[in-house]
Structures are given as C-alpha cells and as structure tokens.
Image 1 (tube, rainbow over the protein chains, first blue to last red):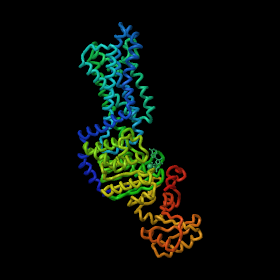
Image 2 (image 1 turned 30 degrees about the vertical axis):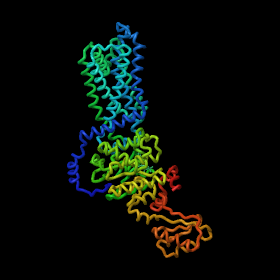
Image 3 (image 1 turned 90 degrees about the vertical axis):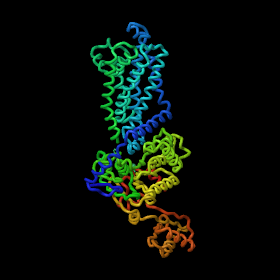
Length: 287
Length: 322
Ligand SMILES: Nc1ncnc2c1ncn2[C@@H]1O[C@H](COP(=O)(O)OP(=O)(O)OP(=O)(O)O)[C@@H](O)[C@H]1O
Ligand SMILES: [Mg+2]
C-alpha cells in the first residue's frame, strides 16, 4: 500500500478510530464560530462590492427600468383591458415586479460564484477549518441585502409614479419579506448552477432558459385569465405566480391572502431544503 | 498515494515520510505530480487510493481536524484579488478565530514581515506577481500552522524576495513547523530541505538526506576561468596537489576553458582561492555552480526530464539566469 506520513507515528486501526471519536468535539465549529466565519466572509463580499460599485448597478437600475418600462409601455393597454387605466395596471404590476426582483439577483449570484471559483481564494477557504456552508451562507446574506436595496428602490419609484398602497406598512413589510424569502431560496438554485457549470456564460445561458418561462409564464405581468388552458396549467403551478398573487393580495387588499402566501412559503422552504445541501456538497467536492 | 486523471497518472504510488520540525523538499519537473500531491495532502483533492497521516490526522477520514493543523500556499496565488492585502489577511485571521484586535495586529505584522506594508491598502489585483506570492505566503502563515505546504513558493521571484521567503520559511521551521516544499530548483532544496524526494511522472525516483543525494549527483562546484587559457592544465595540477579535501575531483573543461572543483566546505573553498592567488594565477571569472534539475535527473535516471523539451518557457529561462 502506498502511504504518506507527516510527523505522526503509525497507530493501530482501532486506536485511530478511538482518536476520531475522542476529538470529534473539538472538530465541531460551534454556532459562535460559525457566525464569526460567516461575518468575516460576508465582510469580504461587501468589500468586493465597495471595490467594484458597478456591481450594484444592476440591483439599483433594474427596478427603475422595469417599473418605467412596464407601467408606461403596457400600462395603458393592459390597464384598459383590466377595466381601468394605467393606474390600475400600476397597482397590478408593481407587486409582480417586487416578486420578480429576487430572480434577477439570484441569477447574478450564479455567474458571480462561478467567477469566484475560477480564482484561487476558494482553495484557501476549502483548506481552512471553517464550515463549508459558511462561504455560501455569507454570500446569501449579502445578496439578500442586495435584494432589499433593490426592493426599496422599486417601491420608491412605485410610490413616485402613483402606486397606491391600499393596505398598511405591516402588509408592505410582509410582502417584501415574502419576496426576500423566495428570492433567497432561488439563490441556492443558482449557486448550485454556478458551482456546476464550467463558465459564467454557461450559467447565464441556463439561467435565462429557466428565468424566461418562469417570469412570463406567470401572473407577474398580466392576469392569466386570457391565456390558453395549457399555459394556465403551468402558471398555476409556477411559484412565481403564487408569490406575485400573494404580494398583490397583501398590497392591494383584495383576493385570497393565505393560500398564495402558504404556497410561496412551501416552495421557498422546499427549494432550500432540497437544493442548499446539494450546493454545499458541490462546493465541498468541487475540484 | 495514487491519483489518476483519466489516463494521466498524476500520482502513481508516492510514499513520503517527514519528521516533525523538518523540511521535506519534493523536487520534480513540470507535470511530475507535485501540485497533485500537495492538493491531496491538503484535502482539496480526494486521492484514488492510499492513505496519509499528517500531524496525526488521516487525510481522508479526518479532513476537518487536519485543516486545523495545515497552511497551504498553492502554486497559484489564492488571495482575493478584489480585497486589499490587509483585508485579505484580516479576513483569514478572523476565519482562524483570532479576536478582532489580534487579527488586526497579525495582519499588520505579517505585511511588515513580507515587506508589503506600503501596499497594504491596495487591492491585490494591482500587486505584481511577486507581491501576490508574498501575500499568499503571509496568508498561509497567519495561523502558525503545524504543517505548511509550499508549492513552488519562489518560482518567479527575484533573488532578494526569494531570500526573504527562505528566511520566513526557516523561521517557521525554527518555531517548530513541519514543511513540505515542492520546487524545481536544486538550490532551493539545498537551502531549505533536510530531506529530499525526487518525483517524476507520479513516482518517487530518488529520496534521502540532501547530503546523500548531493553525493550521488555531485554537489556545488567551484568553476574558475584562468585569464590565460594556456594555463588551464597548470591550474588543475596546482589544485589537485593542494592537499585539500575534494581536490582529487578537479577537472579541466577545455571547451569552456574552466577548471571545476567540487566544493566540500567553506574552508576548503577559501583555501583554494587563497592558494590560486598565492601561486600567481590570474583569474578572469570565478563562480559556484549547483547542478540544475536536468543534471540531477541525468545523474539519477540517466535520462533527461520527461518533458524537458516542452517547458522551454519561464522555467528554462530562470534556470539559465540562475
Ligand atoms: N485537474 C486535472 N485534470 C486532469 N489532469 C490533471 C489535473 N491536474 C493535474 N493533471 C495532470 O496530472 C499531472 C501532474 O500534474 P501536477 O500539476 O501535479 O504537476 P506538477 O508537478 O505540479 O507540475 P508543475 O511543475 O508544472 O507545476 C499532469 O500530467 C497534469 O496534466
Ligand atoms: Mg505544480
């Protein structure tokens, strides 16, 4: 058998096992240690943004452009068919855009993490005594912050151009929180993609393939009532529809709240529970 | 330890043994498997078969314990390019559970030790190759690891920086660390390593104490060029009869116009130079020469390094320059 030894005398097999058991307590990193590591890594992600403020532009401009585009280009026409005017559409599409915001940011995480991996610093993290999930969790937290910035800007623009909040600030917070929860779970999917694909371009390509049908085959931009039956079957199960409906119900105070909210939460938890371990595992074994 | 990539046998049964507090040099040409070895031993790559214990921990079964004990400077810099040098080191200090104050101080100290204080605030992306290398070394030494892996730590560094790096490695060893160092330079191995393993195509082809290996391949030689080529043979005669250690190995190289003498000790070297001036020889150049990796290979295996033709780039140039 081939072997390499450094500094250690050979031990009998059962003694070795005894040692594993004996030291397993020291191996566990502990909650405080984990939080400290996540803090240090999140600081790294924030510093990266500081170093390259351009990377915030998408998060800041996207909501402005989307809002203006949809409200002023489609607002009159769709609003009319909704039995009203542009203002009716504004109140329809803003919740949809709030729901969708997380998607775009989640996708940028995929390309970003892929790029990060082509750099050597990940090798360093992977040889350090830190939980391997902490690198991903730190990224997730900072991206969550980006989603919040993005949502805030979206709502500011919305209020400026006449969005009418029919409920109260609590509902608004709940809606933003729900969108954040869903966006975060999507981020895990894109992290997994980013860790699995060879180049950022490939991640982007696959990302669009996933995003396009999800975004447009949903109730985000227009009511699904006039869509053909087969498409409605899809939109009904599209979690983005659930989220858009939930946010809409919360902000406009009409329609069922509980059902779409629960459906969205179920999707978010389900995606996270399934995908997060896969992503961490992928991170661990990535060569 | 075995690791194959497809049909490439990156590691084809490598056996190593390093004593605590010593430096093992792993010498090998491009593609020998040095980096693969280091990546296996630092838990980055799962070997196909074989086992290794480092600092008492099994590389495959106790990776988490092992990571507490090791520091790694890979062949390619593993620092965050977007962060400043200081931020990089501070982050690593925090990840190694240093309290904030201690992490700050440690970052300052390490930058100082690697002459990077002036560049502390600049993003690593703006560093030169040598600066990045030093930052990387600093990063791997922050935690005072028990075992340090250095994968070609000085390739591409200028001589002054290289000496600085050597000093830091010696200091770590002085503090009790065990070092596994891969290199393509005999000189580096001779400077730092206690023991040496030569690998090629994933296999160990020679190993042992540096002194033993040197005896096998020939160690440092003194090369003297008489100003008058006619005096070549007279000079060899004078040296051979000097009654000093090692002078029996004196040779005249007619093609180059050189006399070469194996160097046994500093005293012998000094005595030789004194003797030549005493005898009234005029010398136009005097130099000490270490066998290059190619010569080591030739001596051990009787053949050239397996891909010596392919890597005429950097490596070759540096060898010529060295
Ligand atoms: N990820 C990989 N996939 C496929 N082949 C690989 C991989 N890593 C290394 N190899 C192959 O394994 C062999 C050993 O490579 P390795 O990087 O360990 O050599 P090295 O001794 O470090 O060389 P160098 O001096 O050039 O750094 C080479 O033939 C290389 O092509
Ligand atoms: Mg290498």
